[in-house]
Image (cartoon, rainbow, N blue to C red; front, side):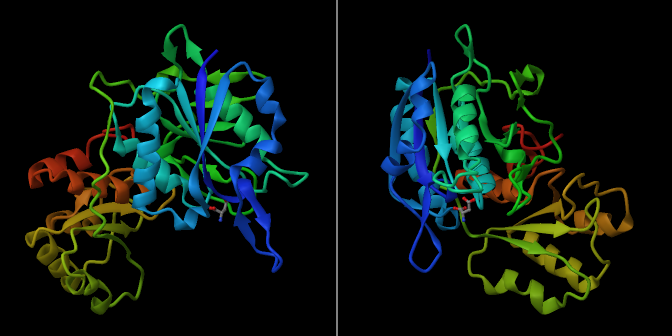
Length: 338
Ligand code: ASP
């Protein structure tokens, strides 16, 4: 029997309809009443919630810190954590927590639902029940999935590899560049060879993220003024550049000049692909090489979500320029393929 802490942050899973028809989060007591099945599980489950549950669009780095703080406070008392969270920004929060929870050695499983728990056809119950099973799953004294993950619609995915893919279907998430960590059918099948190894250090939370970063998506027809945001944003620290294919962008002097000016001025530029699947290969095409030569760091197969929060984390840590480039290309939590 494992001890699980279920943390309710908000999201559709616990929403109810207001008079105008829009959905709004409600308190966890009501959510709890809809899943009496939790009492039937072999695990002991305790509950806690944000004072004010939110739609995940309102999750900000301060809320990530609040969530990380709850986990830190309860870390020694529980074997695993299940976070109920809105689906819209779940991939961002899970990615952020994967970096913020340093030396994590216990499961932190995010889940949510596409339909509120009170709806007849809700997907919430299966998601919560299996997420709890996974968080509590140990082999002797070792947790099966001691990392930050997302469980949704029968698949357990690495949190920092996941993107929200559908706003309409029950299988809302995909992990295009990394296979599932577990799959739920009649049995839950775990894939131990895919699990990120536990590090030996002491568990701690790092929450001083640097948020002066932006994503910039290139597109045919973009004009120099679009890129001038880099100079108009005081103290901008980092840019996640979303490029074509394997990391390509038009060979425009003004573009290279702006990227070089940014990187020379200490702004970090990381190149990731707009493609859902695949990675940046800066040497493959001339259209990719010029960005590299202008100082853009290849982000390999990072998702936008993981690239942004990894940047916030590394900048927040104040690592040197050389270490930043090295860490960006290195897998710190299984977030990229080296
Ligand atoms: N807007 C909701 C949220 O992210 C959507 C959901 O939970 O599915 O909080």
